[in-house]
Each structure stands twice: as structure tokens, then as C-alpha cells.
Image (cartoon, rainbow, N blue to C red; front, side, top):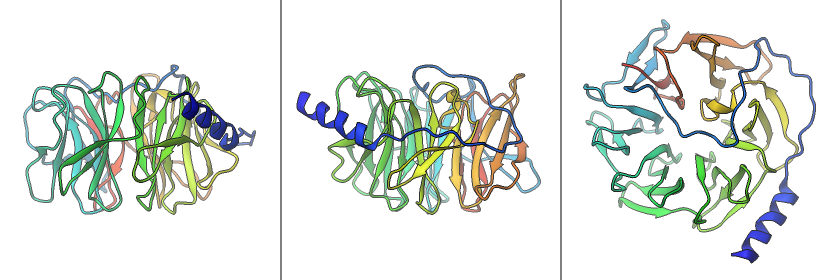
Length: 306
């Protein structure tokens, strides 16, 4: 283990992304600070999944009624909805395939489970669970229902999984070297390597796979660096570190949630071509935190109070 950690540190030093100072033209002010570690995803005491309609209204997804807490939505390229829910009495991952009612696909004996992320092929789900006492990464194969632990490092906390566009790499945030860095693992997902210096909470590839967008620890803010390595550059002062997973790179730009001082949450679109930021809608109610995804029609989906 000591030898492997030395290799990790050496790799981290070589691959460290050096922060640069650039003037960022932005029409909005940055959100507030953040803690030393990204908080687990959370929504209101009761929450459901909603998609944004063209007229600016939010429509609840037809995933059953009642008062569960549904959170962390992600929709595959084939239209299957994966989300975390406590419908069974504790948080597990549920999946609703096209025209089918949702059903649980994990069972960690009551351990909190969340952050489901579809691989581009729609056949694998990355997720996190505290089954072993700390947040850890797993991959679920939907065809076989086989679950495997990813790049295990006992005692470390692993969060915010995100697939590369080709489905061969899995990014995640981890404190396995003492500070939060972005790590990457590849098949067979037994080893992982840091690709940034300390101080990063989440990373996601751009829609074309050229860029790796990241959120900084502390004051937050969106940065990017070439996906194959290079110097990180600032893009925008949002999102805040507390909302480190509340954003999504797409072909149209980066969707993100912005929180006002009074608690109002707005859905914004940041064009990656340098255009003006667009305020698309006010979130449905007092959203505490939510990941973002797109449905088959390209409409944003988030979690909010029913």
C-alpha cells in the first residue's frame, strides 16, 4: 500500500493542473463558499423528479406518487431513469426503464446509496455507497446485476462519479491522498490515478470529449482543462462548492443551478462559445441540492419538492 501511495503522489505531481489567472467575462456574481469536503447529495425532506417544459413550467416525472425522497437523477441514452430513493425505507438505486414502473436495483442492507451515473452504453451504472463505512464507488452491470467495487482504498472517501464520453474512463473525487483531487480509473477498474492537484471536488467531460470541466474547493467556480491533460483555466465563478454536482456539460453549453441569498434556485445555461448566460427557469420549490440530467428530448431534469 505504501509503495502504491508513493506512485499515486508521483503521478499527482506530474499531472497536477496549474491554476492560471484569466479575466472571466460573466454577468453573474459567484455563489458562496464551501467546506473542506463535498457534502453528500441532499434534497428537501420529500422530493420528486421534474423536467423543464418548453414553456418554462416544471412537470413531475411519472415515477409513482406518495411521499418518497427521490434524488440524484440520471437518464441513459436509451431513456432509462436511474435515481436514488428511500421508497424501500432506506436509500437505494432505482431504475425506471421505458414504460416500466421503477424498481430497486441495489440493496446494501440499509447503507445510504446514491449518485447513479449511466455509462454511455446504458448497460452500466456507476454509483456510491457507504456500505463499508465511507463513501465508495461501485459499478453495476445491468445485464447480469453484478456489482463490483471500484479501485478500493479502505478509509478513503470517493464521490461524484462521472463517465468519459467513450465509456472507458471513470472520473471521481477522492481524498485518498489527504485532500480532494480528481482521480481516474479504467478497466478492469482495480486501480486509480490522480489527474489533478489538491483542491477539486467534481469533474465531467465536455460533450465532445475535448475538455474536462471541474469545480474547485473553497469558493467553488467552474474550470476546465484539456481532457488529455494540461493547464486548468477558469470558466465561471459558479457553481458554489456546496453545489459541486449541480451542473452538466452538454452540446448547448453548461447547465447549472444558481442559489440566491433568499434560497431561490435558478437554472442557468452557460454557452461554451462565449455567449451571454441565460436564466432558463426558477427551480420548483426550495431545492437544497440536485444533480442535473437531460431527458430523451434534451430537457433538463432535477429533483425538487413535490
